[in-house]
View 1 (tube, rainbow, N blue to C red):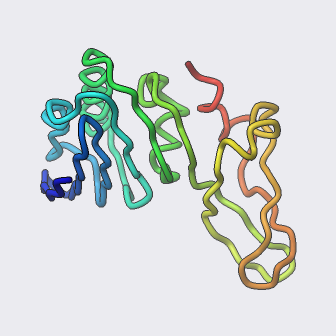
View 2: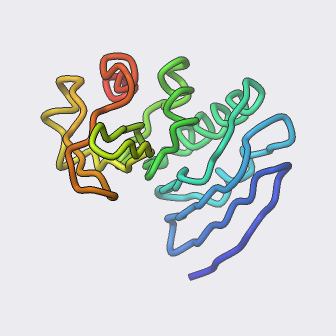
Length: 166
């Protein structure tokens, strides 16, 4: 197992290679200073990309992200995205190719608690919530502050659209 860190623009990429699979954690911004396509050369079988700490992605960053996904698809690599930040979800909802043929394992979504006023981005696992999500319904989430049920703080049909894309 090999672990390396690469900085490209305002994005830090930590990757661990084991066999032909690559586990990647991205932190920072995907923008005009980011170069991602070379990452595909390190992947043989599959890649899992943790996107929780991607705080921003602009149009040039989206172009670079799509180039990475295309390069991975060309290699025949299985692509999984884990803990996708709200910034990434917004791009996937606007631009179909920003998700490509990747499997989304989990993602962050905005919730608010009417009981105590807490607002936060909550991580939702796709598999255990597949039925509700396939109906474009947000799953129930308990407030970490007061334990009341939180309300989804977005329009589900718009925010969850990326899950329907091929």
